[in-house]
Length: 270
Image (cartoon, rainbow, N blue to C red; front, side, top):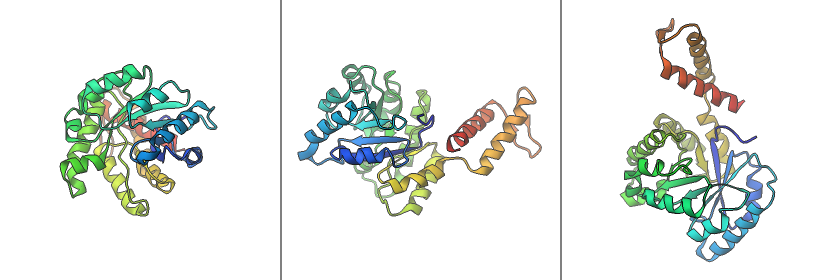
């Protein structure tokens, strides 16, 4: 059964179909076939045809859905009707009109616009709320960093928060974090995930299987968080409306909703 809350998304180059098949066994909740940055220009057409063939096959493990980050509209036309496609990830989206156009080309397909420029960030909410086929939005940090001329990671925090708020305002799930590019620095990845969690992200894209357990641990609730959430729900069922727990914590409907989300994540991890 597909994870109700996907926390780990693993990118795989689209011109390596044998690696895509192996990636489904790596432990990620979602595999993302990348037809854009991970594929050299002279292999784009092969990557498209290989991905189309892969998505036409019966899935060896349908519990691990395949998303595809497209490069051109030709990719969308080639893949949109295939049974193995779960979602299209749309790079460099800046306006709602682009989403409407793609939704018309690929009716019924779940879409994830990627916001990778200053203009995309400015239009984050209108993009997120642009069409019923939009199921999520995400931030493309490498391109945005270049567009803004940023040298320090902290310079992206305003844009990160903007994407989180836009997603929630549009009624979408919290977005997943962008990739952490140093696959050897697992401690740095853990710190980055912890920071992303404080900003409201839920889950993260990875570029190597060794990153997956770190992401999983970072976004799943701790034992202490689970215990606190259980106490909140137990207290909430005993009284209507707002109340104060013996340790001074104030509990209202918003706190109860947060506790339920925590326990749902804990059940997923279990």
